[in-house]
Image (cartoon, rainbow, N blue to C red):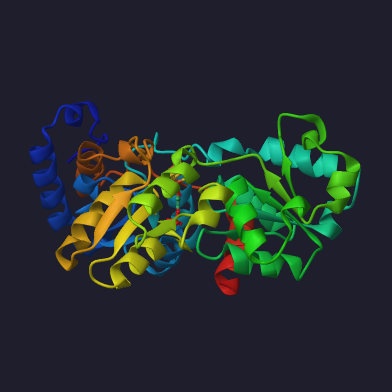
Length: 365
Ligand code: 13P
Ligand code: SF4
């Protein structure tokens, strides 16, 4: 009988082929006790083992509905936190490599958001005037902050609806951490660009004057995704000059200029659906992470569709990439041995408030 968890060292040097075979063997032994949720950016050698794939909204809904004892999340840290918060208390959420974080999520911390709230209090009463909205790409304590202050969570697929929910309650929104998703969603609901201001958390009062705060409808946190900021309007211009009949689709984490020049904007799940539903022979330029784009290109090739990646350089989510077959094999073999490694457990008081903000989102979307 195994007493200690199996250490990862023994898996580090496993050849990919061996790791694949061991994942399959462990999965066969675990059966329905483990469910593997995979985000669309996951690398191919892990994605092939997924029971369920999806964008953040779909995966958070399905995590809540799963009956499995173990929810193995092949994504990034905040996604596994959401799975833990929304699943039943006896279910266990696992992230195969704890270093799989989200650099955008790290751009907003509870200390900085609380300081922002305090500083806003010198100009207005934020608890009466401002709805805090956190993108799901954020730590659980920020979701809890929103839960505690009448706020809500959003994802890339429901942000406009969530803004409507927010403005139905209070006159202004504080949107963190992704400025681009906030700006694009605000713009789509008719808010002028000059009524959306940037809060720079490294500056006193976010670098804003009292007048700017009073005039703003949305205060956007100075955060962004390092993958999506690589996409540029010039790449779209070049594509359109070469292929005037081509279509462009982008993720709303791209800059405003990229979104404005795209034919369609959507979450990862939406991008996949729109390209799959398009007419045979359509040529697409896609502004989102490379693993998704490569997989999509291969899947629709037989219909004569051509799917091109927007950037000239490789743009992968390097943190999600850390979940490799070796870590997955290690995690699953431990479960077979009755050991849980890399459990993601959000402290109860935090989970309760974060769940409130997540439930507001699920009800509103
Ligand atoms: P989706 O919710 O669209 O899958 O996006 C998650 C994400 O992190 C995109 O960078
Ligand atoms: Fe975070 Fe960007 Fe990776 Fe999405 S692509 S998980 S926003 S770092």
